[in-house]
Length: 408
Image (cartoon, rainbow, N blue to C red; front, top):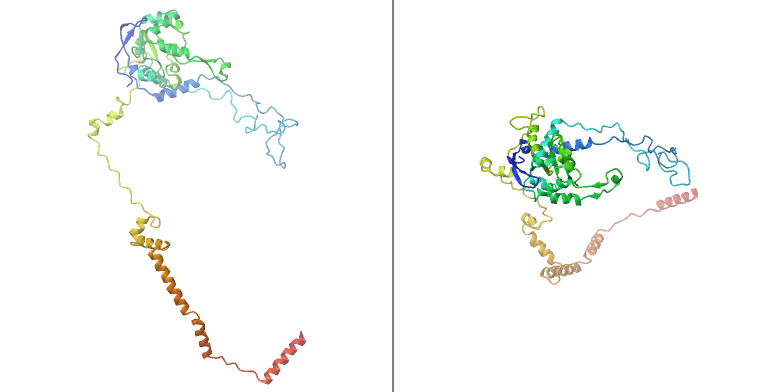
């Protein structure tokens, strides 16, 4: 809920308490920031003036493609010579100075339809947010000297006819710092808006809401920097939630607050002015979720928290992890230690290895040449006998050799 206040204090133009006024149920409407933002964006778009680009923008040159065979893209190119412009690409939306893709037209869909009920809900949420001091302060308004939020002035405020009296009345109710902040914030706008009737920028000040159709304050306070005025019959979301963020500092007159009850009605009965409209009902009576969850009523029916399951055992590589290797092969670490000592000069292992090498070399010297001797003895024990050819065979062989030479 936005606020639980039943009444608000009514202040005179001198800043003194003169009574109280019952706050209508619209100040208790749920704070729907999403609805306010959606409606604000749509309403902002509806203020735009249709515009478009000239039909021949980017196509006002006699460009033509060079065709294929010249190792360049087939985009149309500017004719002529002697300048940087000659030979440059034209027409295409990817070219410098070319036409834009899907050019903006004046007949595009500029307007955004907004449901009437959505606009009314957004206004109700903005009105309720204006009565919440933290939200008003979050928007940057100076409300430390304001006696109460929402700030309600007596009906005499609507009869103020001079700007001097209007400034004095606003300062009397604690809005002096707010007026100074707005006045000091006036600066020249950056960019080309200076040439388009938007030369200065100014921070938002208080919004004065009055009820009388001929209220003199509408003209008396309209020239104060940052101060805006609006009739309660024509409340505008663009003023109540500038930038789509509710929490505008509002100064209500007592007749305006009383008129709000007729315009928006109550939860018991709908509005008597807006046909078929009823204030939105909050989804939750208490939005303090942490307090609800930690209450005894909720905690007594909740199941105990489940313990987080233990993570599965991590598989480790035995070739990289010494502890896992020792678990798989008992004694392997001792073997690695012994092997490492083999490279340490003067260690027991190194001396033992050196002694084995000496013993092996001595044994090799003893048997050196024994293999050759054994093979020699083996071949001599079994001589190879060859049969000599007879004289007739030798003569035949010689004749064959001579015949072969003659043929060559």
